[in-house]
Image (cartoon, rainbow over all chains, first blue to last red):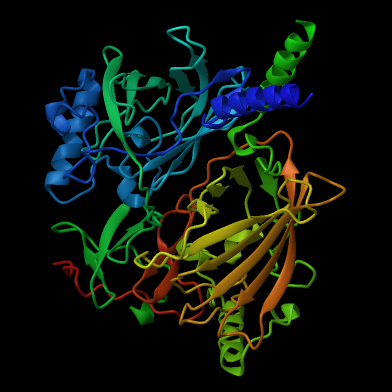
Amino acid sequence: MFQNAFKVALLVGAAWIATAGAPAISDGITYPDFESQWRNPTAGGGGNPWDPTKPMGLGQQAPLTPEYQAVLEASLRDQAKGGQGNNYEAACVLAGMPRIMSLAGPMEILIQRVHTLMIFQGALPRRIYTDGRDWPKNLEPSFQGYSIGKWIDQDGDGRYDVLEAETRNFTGPRALESSGLPLHADNQTIVKERLYLDQSNPDILHNEITTIDNAFTRPWTVDKQYVRERKARWSEYYCRESDTQVFIGKEQYLVSTDGKLMPAHKDQPPPDLRYFGQAQR
Amino acid sequence: MLHRCSIVALALAAAMTIAGMPASATDMKYPDWDGQWRNPTANRGGNPWDPNKPMGRGQEAPLTPEYHAIFEAGLKSLENGGQGNSRGTRCELPGMPKVMNFSQVMEIVVRPAITYFVPLHYPTRRIYTDGRDWPKDETPSFTGYSIGKWIDEDGDGRYDVLEVETRNFIGPRVFESSGIPLHKDNQTIVQERIFLDKDNPDLLHNVITTIDNALTRPWTVHRIYYRQQNPVWPEYNCREGNNHVTIGAEQYFLSADGKLMPVRRDQPPPDISYFKRPQ
């Protein structure tokens, strides 16, 4: 009797040990060890190029249509004069997809039953639904779009290896990097991702991102790599116009240390103050 | 043989029971808090800190005379079209404890080491339950630093209550948009007891006690959140559609045609002496 009880305890214990270390479990198949803080090792090093193997801006050699190549070059010219170009983030417009996956700040992944949750230090949370749902109808388009994913057990070992995700239903304007590398104004972007751990280093997470967009002549694939941070620290970040710049309508101005409005570029006119009493000006 | 099979089957059943659970419950101890939670009274014309009392003076906040005067000055500013002590129109973070009024929906995720409160657009709040001590070099923040402890109150082997303490703040912070202030020394301590309702598992209680030098005594309120069964997560950006513009210490309004407007009668326009005068 005692021997049998011992056997049961042993087997239950073995089962517990086998499963307790896994980050999340469902349907008897375990999920890969994605739950962690991840960083882009090149972020904060003077720009965050969309294709991390190439320089930003023209150096990306983005497969842009002639029309959107002109949009990029206009953005670069404006930035050279002190403007923001197509870098809408300066006005705290959301970066959206796929740019948030450049990880300007760290990201944490939590695998839930219904979705995989990505928590960013500098962006809104992202949810990739993995419960088999179809594309929703009548959903408000957004900068991050709507993501549906599927877990893949690629090597058939009973453990998922890859998260494949597709994201649609966007609003804009969105750019791929701070140079202002544009996505099409029609917002018909489709983003496909394959996320998986490096086979020789489980502290590296790959994200192969393919962007299909009417600003491009062909789908554009880049391989982002994120590095696991085992001693995670988090800063509190929230995008707000800084105390030194302000947007009035579509115009950007600077604010001096004495709290006065200043032009952001040469010969910029002051804002229209017609709604204030004439005598006060 | 049959007996041996039944032992194996029993063990397998146990493993499968564990396998069907999310990570948070692999050791069968944590309550089911996962999901989207809402404040049932949010977006009904204000979000009073004590949900049982009206906002503003109706809260009867136990403020010191000094901070009562600050609160009254804020109310006067609001009456004159200003923003008073509320910083929301500047898209500044509400921080703790105000963020726990759930003005917008939050997702809760429980893991053994951390319980996450993931708001729609504010920074994620992490409550560390791994037994760590207060860090010595953590940068203060609006959300503060939270350490929690799970309690098995009824001794049934399953945790019922998460007790949390939060410290290490910056400011300014207020309790509600009427501008009930917290002390500018930012020495606030927030203590919470979070637990599911015994009769309704889709109802989460949070008993929040705020200890602050702006208050004459600890102030306890009891907030309730409801679990949303079919959650939708809208995208929210405080900056988008925000028609308030701050230049230096002054706040202005942005008209529909993108021009600056005064927020109060006789407000002077901003100083534009740094711009070139038209020739």
